Image 1 (tube, one colour):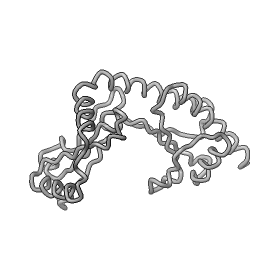
Image 2 (cartoon, rainbow, N blue to C red):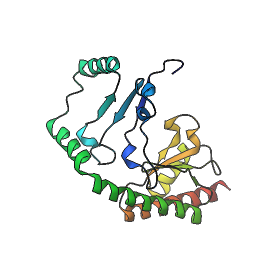
Image 3 (tube, rainbow, N blue to C red):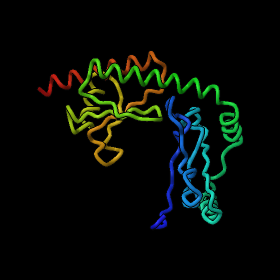
Image 4 (cartoon, helix red, strand yellow):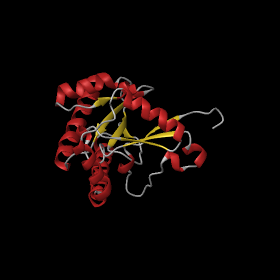
Amino acid sequence: MKHHVLLISDELHCDLTHPGYQYTPMASISNEIANQVITLVAASKAFNLAGLQSSAIVIANEEIRKKVDRGINTDEVAEPNAFAIQATEAAFNYGEDWLHALNHYLEENRQYLKASLENHCSEIKMVPSEATYLAWLDCSNITEDTTFLTKYIREKTGLYLSEGEIFGGNGDKFIRLNYACPKTILEDGVQRLIKGIQLFEEEME
């Protein structure tokens, strides 16, 4: 507020808040903050509708909203197909029960991943989170080059993981793992991960 910063808040994962936690929109903190926030939301993450290429921009400030509206319509990028609009409306209006079940399923997956690492690969620490289906794994106890580590695991086990370097900062010490999948697929992936880490540590000794 002091420096008149315009904040763009990416809240696409907001519907994937873990059970027991509450999603708080940035714009809900105060009217003053809402007046300087552009909020991005979509059904794409929670309802697996990314292929429809539909999202929404929420802006309380009328002046900012007019500028954004002009910007996104300059190159005709704000014209989603009719099916995308109907699917998004259906997800937000009628998908609550399904989303509730999904979040509990994801919580079970997250707990399985966490327990598996603690029991079989304690060097890898799962960073605590309150939302989303993307686990951030701290590998700094065994390496600070997860680009090499993910490549090694892929070559040895066939498991594809996201190296943290692409996310900037100190990301080269981390791996990102997506656990939004059937439990059987996750179990297979976790076993590959554990095997890859064990082989890596043996070779690095």
